[in-house]
Image (cartoon, rainbow, N blue to C red; front, side, top):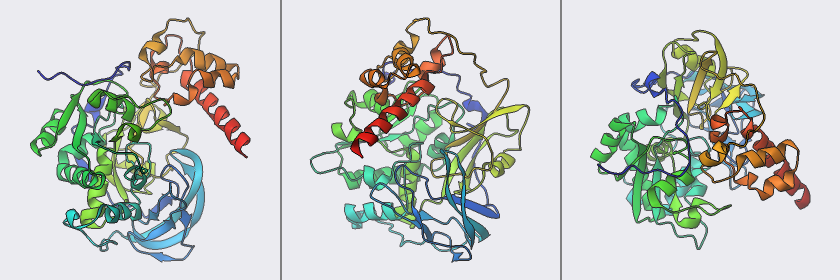
Length: 437
């Protein structure tokens, strides 16, 4: 039996994948009104280039790129701009959205399809990926054209597609790999061509045997991973598959590796082969708080409540609504927030599912230290952050924390460790900005 790949540390939360894991992707119509956020990616939000009353067509640019680490934004529908609206967003408190009244979802692709990507240069393909507005679709939403453009002197030899999907409840990537295997494989080949890499592999946890079989059957090198959280974090994925470690404060490209998500690969395939911009994505809707959990192909700008309705509506005593999974997802105060390119899942938790915590004192058990995949001392960083000793928290590596939640998950005293560490990160970064100003 092949040894399963993994990394030091981590935890094993209950998966709850069975709720939506067998549900085939179902494409749903765009709603009568879409609210397309102009900030759907890491970096600067795009600038609006439409105004109230403007007619737009499907795939038209409605927000222009605003800096190198930024992306254009496109309309997922043909319709009329009803206005620009400041509204709550799933990944941040609020942001500007273009509100469009939908007439149809019909229309030709806005870009010329390129059925043979090898007839194009890497620079042309990167430009197409940029113009299509593609960002990471696994959560971080980093602009893909930037990730595929390493600076001079940084040689990339390995491309790893992230198909781990280690968050509980989420199954969108799983279903994508099973049902749209060709898109994932083509996207991987396109990115490998752009980067000129020597090795390509897909990392998939062993709890997705049908996805492993689908990609292996397509001739892809599949690295089977142990089921463990946060196996899908790119630094942990790189460690598991290559044995290389990203240096503290460094990036994967510093050790010759690029790690896109499988959803990103599929989006790249659709942009290059079909001429389609990033205007739809697959979203898991799950949790005991919905009647019929499933995976839905939805237009960007679709409100959460429409997707919840497609999943049969609310069920039971829903006490928490998350964008993303329960470990790193963000709690929402309204289900009117719109789907963005980075919305991997919507999880509705009932009172029985959600832990109601009463924080106690640290008992110095060291469980958080053993579990931390970044080899930090969460208990000490949090203790200093709680006392607002920001300098000491920084010395202990607060900025290296990726807020995966493993420390909080294993803490027997239910300490709000991630909360304290994120407070420290905000304070440290604010102090750095103040010094630079």
